Amino acid sequence: MTEIKQVQVTSLKTGRYVVIDGVACKVLKIDTSKTGKHGHAKCRIEAAGIIRGEKKVVVLPGHDKIDSPVIEKKTAQVLSVHEEYANVMDEESFETFDLKIPDELKGKIEDGVKVIYWVVLDEKAMKEIK
Image (tube, rainbow, N blue to C red; front, side, top):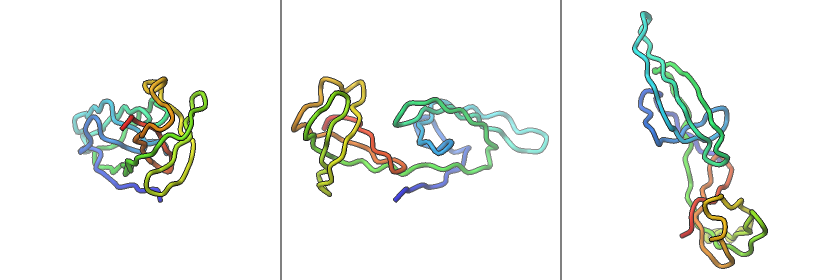
């Protein structure tokens, strides 16, 4: 089910999504060095994990390709809240599962609320209230 496409490292821009060390990340900063005597520019990519927020830094040749995750955005309804997790039901498949409530939504999530969650590299993360 994991969907990934390949993109040229030099075509990356801030805000795009990439896979670094098996973690889906959002590009925060990209620095490209000048071409060296062998003709290849190096790109230093700083990124943060989409789900856990971990920082990643990688240096790649500009002519390389890097994986970019395909993000599915879905809607679910909150069935119950238990401390920092919400039990939700997907509105299309009616599948129920637990999602961790992000810090910025704590206190706003309650029974019956509709939320938007992302499916990235077979992981699910709550992103916003619909």
